[in-house]
Image (cartoon, rainbow, N blue to C red; front, side):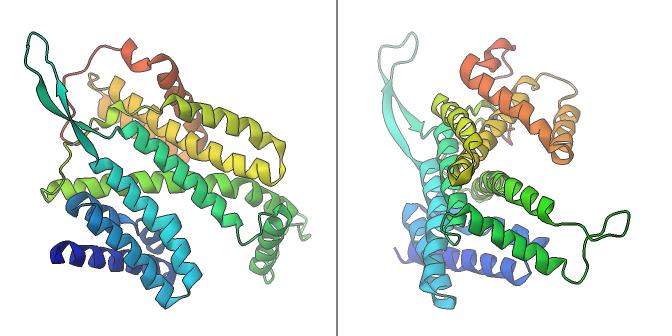
Amino acid sequence: MNQYLFIGIAAGLATALLNLSGYAGGMVGVGFILVLLSSLPIMIATLGWGSFSGLIAAFTSGVTLALIFDLQAGFLFLLLNSLPAFWIAHLIGLNQQMQVTEDNENDPVEQTIWYPLDRVLIWICSFVSLATMAMFIPFGFSVKNYRDTISSLMNQIYANAPVKGPDGEELDLTWMVDLIATMAPSISTLMLVISLVTTLYLAAKITQISGRLSRPWPNLHQITMPLIGVGVFLVALLISSFGGIIGILAQITASAFGAGLMLSGLSVLHYITRNNSSRGALLWGAYFLLVFFWWLGIAFVILGAAESLIQVRSRFPNPPAGPTQSGV
């Protein structure tokens, strides 16, 4: 018990330290990455030492930030960062024993069934949606307050260096405020989904290398967004056109589940290229284009949705049995 308690406390302190270091660095470059990966110690503690250690780590991180800043800051960090990280890692370790009858065998064989990664993806998208929506709490869920804050920030940034057009006249910043107000929720949501998935992958890989990962390494190119996720995405996409705070909240939901569908589409790409001799070049090329031409992600969203609806993978020859060592 003492060992698991110590691991949990240490992981929680490490999470708080990563978050503090990131903000101390001005949320630029390495500091920004530290904040995005701040939940890594909690996930490692949960995957490697169990849910007790993970839960202790989550609460330790929240209490630490509450003591350093205030109760509200610690509570929000616990609710929006630490507890979701703990819960997702906890789900990865869930399993149940089932009696399964193999072909040509009369006696049932005990088999371990692990919590499906597809459902974990739903949880990630849901948590990120709620976390991004919580960003509007300081604005009282008011679009006007949200835009006024962005406008004030832009005016402060360009107070000493106004934006000027080709004719030398000072430009109105309204267009920039409109652009940021429109794009910020979706960009924040997309980054949170990708960072949470990346953090989970790193935590699982570190735990596996250490020999403490109880779950066999999963086949990552079999991940599929459940149909309910596709439905949520489509409904949210429709509601996002309504405008107002309801439209923005729907935009956030559509962005989160759209990011999940994009990851599912990339998983399909990994699957269908397994027998291709140019697989490495194709995958690296796809990721390179996706980074610099983000709108290409729409194609992977469509591919992910198509897999959920019509099982695209089944239309390609079966690859060699079993995942690769990396699972990709």
